[in-house]
Amino acid sequence: SSVGGGDILLKAVGCISQSASISANRSSVIYWADSNGDGTGGIAICGTSSSALVNVTTNGGGIWLGGGSGNASWTPYANATAITVGNGTANTTAGNTTAVQLIFANISTGNGSVAIAASSNQTVGTSGTNNAVNISGTQISTTAGDITITGSLLGKYTSGTAVSLNATSSLVSVGGNI
Image (cartoon, rainbow, N blue to C red; front, side, top):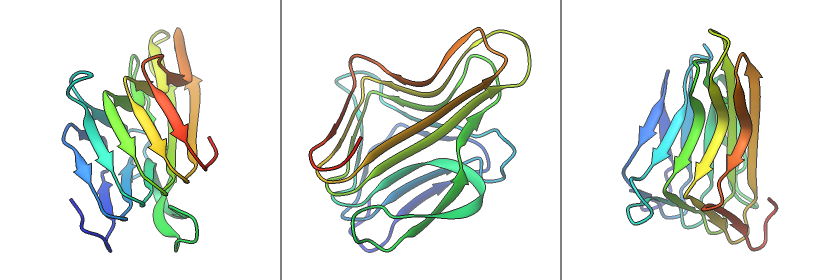
């Protein structure tokens, strides 16, 4: 929980897994996986059912999900000072995996933007079902912020998607772009 002024940074060499809620007051939340850039490090924000959601609420701050071993700048909401985030994507190289999973989550930013960048690049075997981004049973909403989801599906797989948005999910931005 943040009362404002400081951002929340979750940074890992490998994967980030979240099953508890986060609440911030105009602070941004940064999920920075695969910070060593070796291509292995995903992000999972998962509740257990539609009645047991994981909430990520910023009340005006942005939410960034990605990875990379270097730094990049990202502006989390209109007229904000840019913040440091990773310069790449959250990644998976194994079969039957997903780089970014948002399952039974409620993500709300108010005026903040949401940015998701993920890549699935299965490097071993010749089959598997892979996804770069899987959004299921999840609502992502902003009042003025943009929602940007970028997925890349590469490598050896039988089936997969770069971005999967399941019918029980929604993306809503009243004044921003999707």
